[in-house]
Amino acid sequence: MDRRSVIKNAGIAGVLAAGVAPVVHAQGAAIRWRLASSFPKALDTIYGAAEVFAKKVGEMSGGKFTITVHAGGELMPAMGVLDGSSNGTVEMAHTAPYYFFGKDPTFAMDCAIPFGLNSRQMTAWMYEGNGMKLFREFYAKVGVVNFPMGNTGAQMGGWYRKEIKSVADLKGLKFRVGGFGGKVLTKLGTVPQNIPGGEIYTALEKGTIDAAEWVGPYDDLKLGFNKVAPFYYYPGWWEGGPQLSLYVNKKAYDGLSAEYKAIIESAAAFAHTTMQATYDAKNPAALKTLVGQGVKLKPFPNAVLSAAFKAAQEVYAELNNTNPEWKKIYADYSAFRRESNLWFRFTEAKFDSFMQAQKL
Ligand code: CA
Image 1 (cartoon, rainbow, N blue to C red):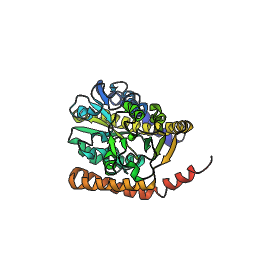
Image 2 (cartoon, rainbow, N blue to C red; image 1 turned 45 degrees about the vertical axis):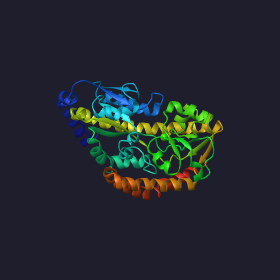
Image 3 (cartoon, protein in one colour; image 1 turned 180 degrees about the horizontal axis):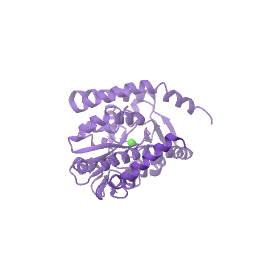
Image 4 (cartoon, protein in one colour; image 1 turned 120 degrees about the vertical axis):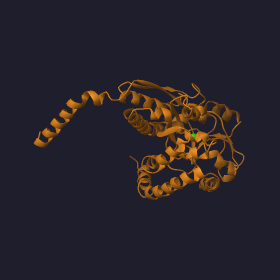
């Protein structure tokens, strides 16, 4: 051990000796909070992110800060968690913000909009761009403090009973689709259907609907859609990187010690990373299993993607003209997307496409 590290270590020891009592025990009183999830326990990846978060908060606070996680419908309806965390019925919620696009389409930008940011870009915009700042201002109006907490990565384009060969095949298609994508698909003549996860299989089997999208291979395999709709399309252009959010009631949050606030921020960031990692680790094997069971894996034709892209721009132009909140955030979001895609095309895109073509 050289002289410098001896001095450094002695210094740390001195600080620890002097500071043990006040520093270690400064985390405040024991508290117990409730978190209402929008998701069923069966979605272990998405619902699981809230459990990862609660466990980490417990560990970081030495067991003093306890958070119980409740599945959608347990304390309130799955879609009621924004109101629940806003009015303080629960201190916290975990949800996909695009569920609330009926209240204001701006919510969708805190999750996914068609042809929006991918998972890495979304995290960059939130943490290092203006995303967090803009959405903190947005959510302050409903008394909520938001934190990014999970991303599925780009989703699949869903399950179809018949092939989609052209834009015309989307006309009249009864399609179960989550979030904001329906608004764009409507312009192409598709009839979006709002059906809860547990009822999709039967609707597809009976032909009540023609197609349905859910998440990606890992979650879709569990629901068995391949048995009733053989064509599995990609990519889910309406969900290129949907982000989940943790909502904290603002009054409850403001009453926390600085240490507990830091613990929430760090645990949410940990759960955010964990959820994407879980999907990236679990989807490959699930896709292999599906293909092994005879699933017909198909890319959307470019003409379909281009028509959908054009329709999305029309929707955004309309919102820019009618919704000042949307206009303000979308200006920043779309500028970030443009710059990010200029950069990613040289690096990840080229590297990934080369590596994916190799036989390792
Ligand atoms: Ca989806």
